[in-house]
Image 1 (cartoon, helix red, strand yellow):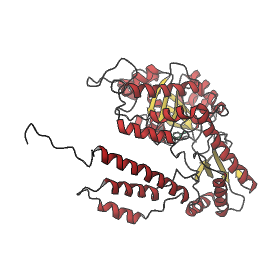
Image 2: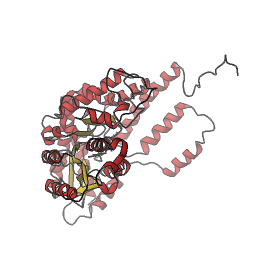
Image 3: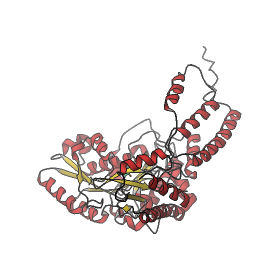
Image 4: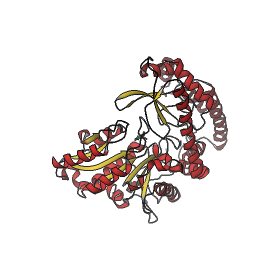
Length: 471
Ligand SMILES: *Cc1c(COP(=O)(O)O)cnc(C)c1O
């Protein structure tokens, strides 16, 4: 090799314009065809895993293969090898079929691949993300100077809340860690919280035993008196309370903790107040439903996942806070090599991530295309789907055990039916619909959630028929 020679680009990785265009055109059509087949097929995967493993074993990566062939193989694997969240009879966990504008956004950010760590390298993307974050902050009723960022998910946003809480509780936490506190620290959320809090307590260094799970009121909402009692009792024992997290839309039953009373308690006790609205935060878009989240405006920080009820592609959470200075303090770092900028907030100086994808474009395009009104209609439609399912099941002797105005329904079958777990496994085996077993106040319930934007009355009838056949 001489200093005057470099090899041609690796064509498999960087094909020419013509090849790209033809592969992309075919890909667009192949994905549309696959989507049609998914709608007509079963909700559950029907892949032969033994065959798949054999095929995988043949990928020893010793010889290159044509991309076209690989794309077809990948589409087939996803078409047959996943529970289809894109199916209108997926009444499942908070996983949406991705709305179309967010899919367009992924293509755009994939093509430009901007580095969102710094506003120096990505002035426009960082400004767009900030604009969306502020729009949601205002919608939630938080102060004008609130800030935040996009996260990979709700867990990262919740973890960020805990780090901010610790940072505000004692400025020396930054250098000394939790040993700076007078005693063991504690955070509080309800028994019905999303279980990632256990991992967050672990990874943040406060330890899993620092997570205090407060009793609920029999209907899945945090009991404020029990919360106040726990905080008082812990203080008496030398424990240092740092964070209260109320859930607005519990994962199991869509219940909203008493947001205002929790805020009042947190303020009186000088504890960081977080509202985990990962799923339920979408209700802010609807003028009819946003009142369900009254009190969210009192939060120090809020988590909202756009990849749940707002139906963007996966991995699009938001952390929003009224404390910009604490956020900057929590993630400050010096890095000479980073492009500096005076024009705005640098994500790498205000969040867990460093290299980061342009996630916010997904929500920007969706919200701009639909407007608050369109997003509100999407959210209200999900509630209508649940109301229809509820009416049909009540008429057939089922009972409703959660009192949520959001789009989750928890039911129990009529007396004499098999246990909920048995019914759910029969429904899944029938492949006609996807529903879950959840725990509400310690007992198994059958959980039906509407996240799909295109579910029809026919789909609801099919769900009800599948449930009836399974009991
Ligand atoms: C989904 C969810 C989380 C976790 O969010 P991920 O995006 O899955 O990490 C946290 N809290 C609540 C209430 C949730 O519904």
